[in-house]
Image (cartoon, rainbow, N blue to C red; front, side, top):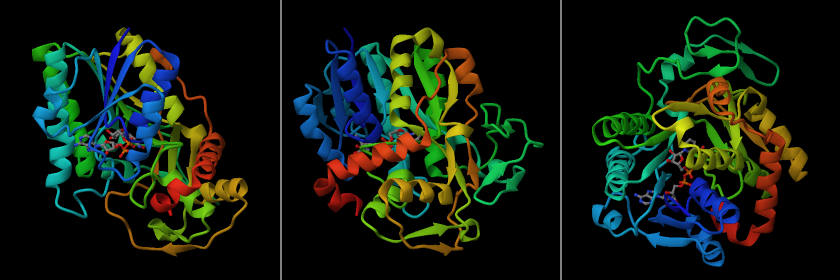
Length: 354
Ligand SMILES: NC(=O)c1ccc[n+]([C@@H]2O[C@H](COP(=O)([O-])OP(=O)(O)OC[C@H]3O[C@@H](n4cnc5c(N)ncnc54)[C@H](O)[C@@H]3O)[C@@H](O)[C@H]2O)c1
């Protein structure tokens, strides 16, 4: 029996972790801790009740809230503000306090409970300019990394853990990298056992996509409700590319991290959909049109968003070789599952995604 605390447990990834673990391990105690700041997170509370998943309303920024949490063996930290634009288009104090100071309260709670930590970090720890300066090829529907690269850590397969960390990355990326650095200190000086994963874009049902975060849901929702979209940046061509990992594959990895600590503790891995599960915005449009049967107006917008990337693809070589984890679901599964989730919950989601 394990007692698992998921901070940010009512969010997209957190709630998926709670529910999948509950289905697979009926004897575990699972507790979601969340301040319900993200719009739509409250919709998960009814399912938590039905599934015997505990819920605690609290804020990781508040030490007293963390102190009130019942004892646990493993903390999965999934409560960061995940928008790359946060702090760039608003006062950065919020994201720094939430993602860094809040994370440190989580690390302290792990020490107090003698618990392990599973930390969901991000590909956004890698610097923008290093990735933007990579050699690329322009194809009819998308950009790709070119096979000839000068920079160690970039190849046609994507970005590996060897990439330089020198440069700016966004407040979001900086708070996550700083948290990773503090995890090292806690491991060295207090013996904190922690698994850290730098995830690329994750998508799937329960993601409350909006224009600055959650691209796959945003794209499908706009097709579903027949509303317009824009191809923003890179000349408005829609050729910029991301790899996307199905949330079920992310949860399968967290499950491994819970049960096979020897493979993960003290290490940092990249994990994502990889080249095979990558798509440009234009390619995502094609998928959404086929699945929804709707065609919408998408206009070019040549304005460039700060900290945007032409291409991000995860090179999964290290994690696949060292741990055996490998994504299973493909791009079509991701968009089909999002479509089914929206159509099953159309009324509830109308006010949030439309
Ligand atoms: N979604 C992705 O593509 C992605 C990729 C890489 C890493 N991550 C990481 O995964 C984690 C979860 O991301 P997500 O996509 O599920 O985001 P989300 O916004 O859906 O979930 C975050 C949850 O945390 C809650 N929360 C925010 N601040 C809190 C606080 N101070 N105290 C308690 N709860 C708080 C929110 O209400 C929300 O329910 C984040 O740490 C993020 O950095 C996400």
